[in-house]
Length: 524
Image (cartoon, rainbow, N blue to C red; front, side):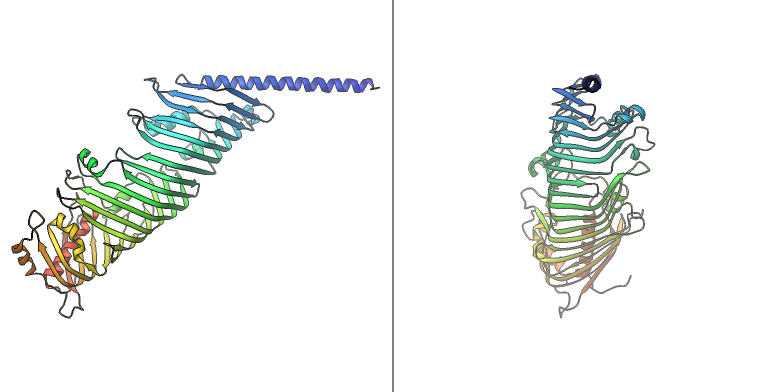
């Protein structure tokens, strides 16, 4: 028989267990009710519904099943966010911090199978979205881990409903994440230790004309890899020309893989965004760039690359950028009914050092080796200082054996000039600034002939062709071993044209001096 004192102990334990279970049930119910009230009263423009809320006071676990979130624009009542989820799970809520430190701490927040459709209003600035979000947070929030799994995100234009961004398969995880609304600077308001982002089949409308598409993205705190990258103009060439009010390039750019190593980015103490990488690698880029010159000219001033980089509204520092096995084709339409002129660069390998506006007096150097028009070797060395406000630059090139007739499909429609003959070797150096430059050129060639065409671009203008070739030396030298030299001290840039138009103007003057001049080398 059980002694009376043991009976009393069992009864006390039973009562404690029952009371504990009852209090736990009541506490869990109270927490679930309070969470429900908070979700229902976020704001007048936000409506949140769910299947159930499950809370456990002992483990700090909270789960909201099948939540849906609708956010309306306050003035028009138009829905701008429609989100559905399988569940939201919060693990290990820190009650001590919540009660005594005015801080919300959790071990993990998991958002599973999010399907979100958001309408972006371009009139509202990004800063306004950020400040509105942070203004609603009054306490420090810290999470050891936040995970978004199997998400499908769609952002469309508020007015037209056209797609701005689509990511049908998106996964994200961030560690040691904290929001401190009272932090003194922007880079301290939101902090984290590490993150990992994976996405597939991204589509981003960068503007009204062009889309970026990426098959696969893997992004971490210190590296990034993009596979199957594409930048494409949305319209066909003819459709594009019909809607343009001034000339603009038609793009078809692909990239097998882009890798960024030793990546570092964020907001600095001056509250300015920065983006740095020690090494960027582009594998098998291919670009076809087409311009219809029948469309009205874009007469805006074109900046040299040094100034463009210097005037970026963020800090960029790419220590080394390498291009592996690339190719570029430039097509230009000049006359109705005529063949489009085309320049091809293939088997391109390049290395760029110190690309950005954070390298002080260090030079940006560009070294390129490629095939020009498929058969001729071309080596280019180009350098300038981004920090130099006078924008001085040096451009050197070495072109191997080249049959001038290969340029006929470009020079005939663009210049009404047909060239015959073979260039055995061409070297030139261009030094200049945004307005003027000097070129020094030396060339060795055989049986060179210039044919001037009539305005229709088809028939030879015999008189002008004969006149021009009176001044053209057929060969670089009688023994065909020596170079002819050409130079021009004052090549004036057309500032409404591209950097490469400036290079072409220099080469044209240098060739004219070498071929039609005395061919002698001159000292500066």
